[in-house]
Image (cartoon, rainbow, N blue to C red; front, side, top):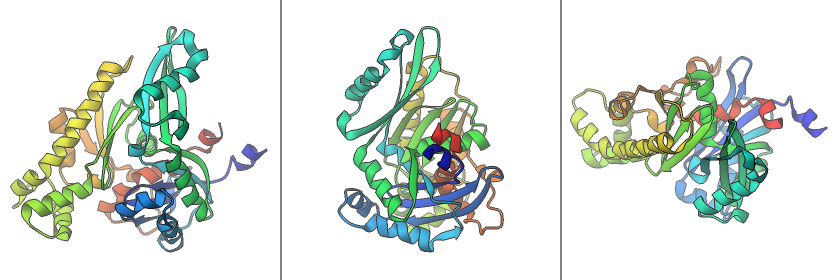
Length: 350
């Protein structure tokens, strides 16, 4: 009876990361945002709060829904996003004849490749591809302490968590619906403090992460050009890699961090090409996230990876309606939470 009762409840997305919390409510039939909000967090205090040391996150959660909300939330049932950098995602294959031993195969993968004991993880898995002789399995594991803390934070604001997923899976859902994500796609999600890289080929096949993000770009510019952080941020979002009087210095400042992202992206792409069975030819690179607001970054990825790349912009289909819209250079930060909010209810209750 409980599933029947909850099945038609509106779903809202809640994204908790090291640098901020975002919340969004979407009418999926109209692709219309009915409410949204965000609040910035101090990364140095987030981990302490996740470890239960204080009420920093619960107090900011209350502020987010109480003061920082634009519009209204459709309900209190939440899909919660966990940063991809805190999750472990792997794709592996087993013989079709071994399906009865799938649970044991997953446990073996965890023991071999995840540096955390199985007893301290929440582990989920699904068969994403079948052939006559082989099964392809997608596995995701998250530390229990991270999930439990984030659920408690949501519940402190009167919200009910009905699903937890990796942030990059939420991004993939939105891109599939709005950005030709049905094509085999490289996702580069540049957040404020880190970058998540994933291969989307009908589902997430592999994901990686590194500690370079939009804030890194700002610090690089400030140091190279010897300007205050606020001016460095303005130069990043207004000039970026585009032609201009300061182009040479800006490109010089940004290149080392961008090269690190390119190197990790190439590593993930190589793993997909060499290790994923029955892999498809990668067709496009989609750059997303709050750190993607650097003019010219799409062309940079196109040139470096020799593959069509662009900054994803799902807002042509996803409409803010009559709500005041976030500034253009702030919209990318809402892509993850929009993906969380756009999950189909039947996906949760199936």
